[in-house]
Length: 380
Picture 1: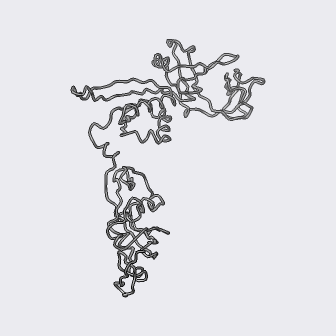
Picture 2 (picture 1 turned 120 degrees about the vertical axis):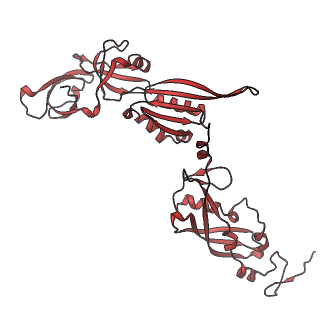
Picture 3 (picture 1 turned 90 degrees about the horizontal axis):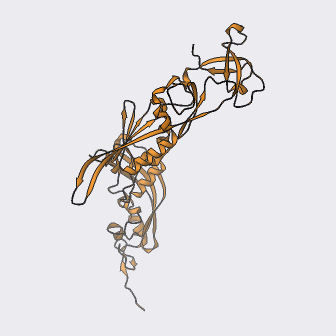
């Protein structure tokens, strides 16, 4: 059986088994200081433009963290080398005989936001040699360093975009596209730059596939036509490759529900002429209702995107939904079913003279009751 000679503790001279610190358990606990182990050259990287923090680990991950939030606390604790799982016990830790360091409590210490300092109060426990555990409170200060993230770096580098989508539409029609960008995080992450144009907006993408995906999603939210062109930037004859820039022009149909439009008789393939009301706008069609229907059942006319742009010169908007007037229902036909046209008498106020009443035919007669307030398009 092997035997080991004992050595005296360097502080109290008590005989102890040999260990890297050459100290007994009591002296090791009294002399140990976690501050020098945890709080040494601590920093976090933050992008000055997008204000995102770099995640520790060197994987190039960046994320937004609110000031003094739990996510920022986890990021700071992951930046301490002594607490990292991938950090080996070398140098001073090996000299002190530290086996592991664990944090049992952590809290923020207020600092001025412009000081570029993050202060954290930690309660840590270190497991030392000879089965000794030391618990101490340590203040760790992290320095915010400015570092440009890869996304912002690409934006400020020449020839970083491969495709641009030029959305062309009046401002009030772009609601579906704006909602698509706002609600879809994946699409937002692929947009490199945004530039406002006179009659729309230009969206720049780093790859052709991202631009094609956005165009496909935009067409499904509002009727649109797409034109695609490409431009040669450079070629490499040795590898037989070419650098191309693609341009997509997304022309959106400038109509929204409840628009009152005028359809010229020269328009072909629509199936109606005169005044019409836009009842619905879907991804591939515009649905119109005759604004001056005859008695009987009213039929909705579906206008495709191609048919609309062929006859765009003969379709003009007369009134927008925000230009309606308020009237009161004086009288309405009884027994009119849904989808049928009925006569409704309207007046600017209840109890008006018969000479001031306005009679109109509408497919919404089944919803009208005497005394209801309705919104109408007044063409006077």
